[in-house]
Image (tube, rainbow, N blue to C red; front, side, top):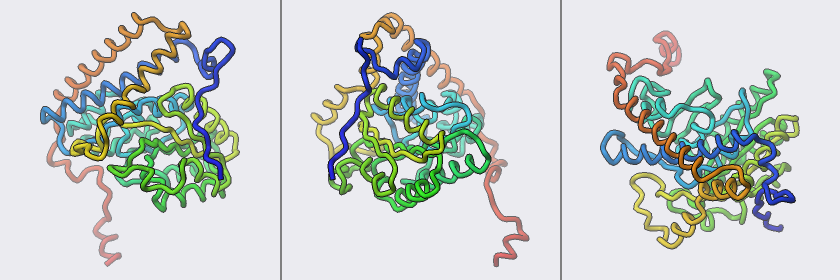
Length: 349
C-alpha cells in the first residue's frame, strides 16, 4: 500500500494559489484576522491562567490556527461542527464572540455555557457549534448523528468533526467512519494531526503512516494536507464539503500540524526536543499565510499591522468584559442540568 502524499495548495499560472480566486480580498483579509484572533485569544487565556483568573486547565492550539480557519472557510450558515478539548480555534472559526468565550473561561454567567463548561466544553448551538468534548473521539459519533439529522430534515448542510490524532485509534473513530460510509452521510472528518496524543507520538501509536489511509477501509476518500498552509487546507476542505453536500458521502481530511505549547498547562514538554519545537515554529502557519498574501500583492505590511492592532483591542475589551461580568448565582447550581423527575426515578428503581 502506497503512502498518500502530503498535498499543498494548487498554484495558478501567476503563482497565486487557485483557492484564493474563490474569495474576495476582504474575505482573505478576514481569514488572516481570524487566525490572529485565535492566536491572541489563546495567548490572552494563557496569561489569564498564569494570573490566577482562570482555574482548572486548558489545552491550547497555538500553531494550529490554519486548520480551523481553512476548514471554516468552506462552511456556510446551517453547517455544524463538533469540536475537541483543544477547540478554541474551532469555536472562533465558527463565529464565536471572544468576550463570551472569555466569560466562560472565567466561570461567569455571561459565558456561552453560563460559566459551567469552561475551556473544554464550550458550545454555541446558535452558530452551529455543537460543542467541544473532553472525551477523546467523543465528537465523532455526535457528528455522524448530526449529519443523519440534517439529511432526515432535508437540509442542504454538512457536519464537520474535528478530532486529534489520538482519537484515530479509538473504537468510536472506526464505528463512526463505517456508519457514515454505509449511509453516505454529509459529514467531513477533520483530523488535526499535531504529531502527539498527549506525550505519545503517532509514530509509536499508529500503524499506518498517514491517518488518511484509514479511509480506504471504508471506501471513501482520505486526503493528507499541509495543515500549516491555508491554501492546502481550504482547497481540500472545499472539495470535501462539496462532496458531502452533493450526497456523495464523507471524506477524511488529515491536516499535518503542530502545537507550539504542551498538551495542557501541566505539560512540561520532556518528550519533545527544543530543536523539534523550534523547527515547527519556523513554519508558523500565520506567518506563512501573511507571506502568501503579500507575495500575491493582496495585502500590505501596514494593513497587517493595523489588523493585528485591531485584534489586540478586541481581545483586551473581551477580557475586561469577562472580568466585569457577574458570577452565576449559587442558587442556580442545578439549572441547565438534565435529571429524572422523582416519578421517573422511582420507576427506574
